[in-house]
Length: 332
Image (cartoon, rainbow, N blue to C red; front, side):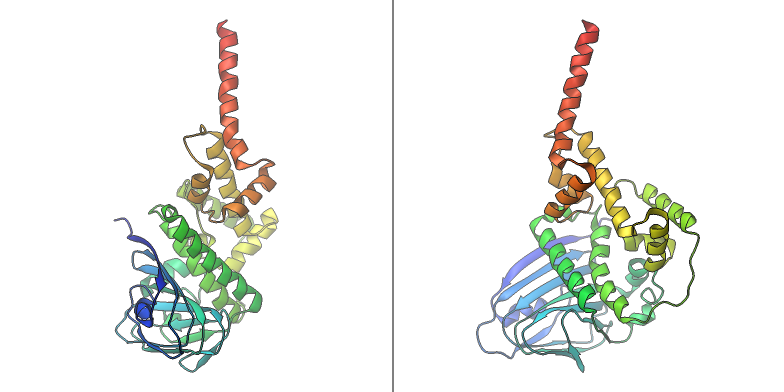
């Protein structure tokens, strides 16, 4: 059964609009600051999985009753004044864990923006697989607060906003074929902040790098042409990301994220090279391979192949014309 896909965005025109601050979960809201509330609330829904990003201009009190059986992981994207959830004073890009069936109480003292991911606890293993602590459902059964690393938190926050902006603008990029990739991309932003707050993994367990790489390549081969997120590989192979990173650095001299990007660039190149102009567009092919920042994609592409994507696509016409000339000469 295909997952239910939703991309929705609306302007906020009153605190009542924030009752759906987290997609699929009712939130009781009371306005604290003076003035008419306005802002924006956006949702991405993939089955029972959702990402919500909201921004508003006045102080707010939020409460969630204990009837929601889904896990919610939130991140503070911006705040002009103090923000507190339960007894936790939140700083920029901090991550908050609201377990299933647990009441929540938050106070935003001024204009703020947040992101919240909501999904079933049963999805923890497939989404966080490979990271033993994160893939253990017990890790998420207690409310928690993870202090963001300054650099990692800023990157994760910007990435979440870019993903939402991209899907809001290019709704067609969220398809059943790419749904798993986008879910993992979203969760990965939250996981980055959580992992940076946890103590280092001291297991010291590392498989043979080349043997591990071969398993990765077998997984990529089985996936076909769809984009594959690095967290999917960790889950499928049951290895932590840092183990995967060491293996790729040893074998290729670059990390798995760069490797997968190069592989997706190669897939785009092959599709463009073999397609006639007018039959596909560069943007459509790029988005099918998981590139949601088309300007950056074009930079990556030209740096890797020494030509623009449109030149590769246009080259298909030149090749066909050359074949026609050669055929005419042979027949003549």
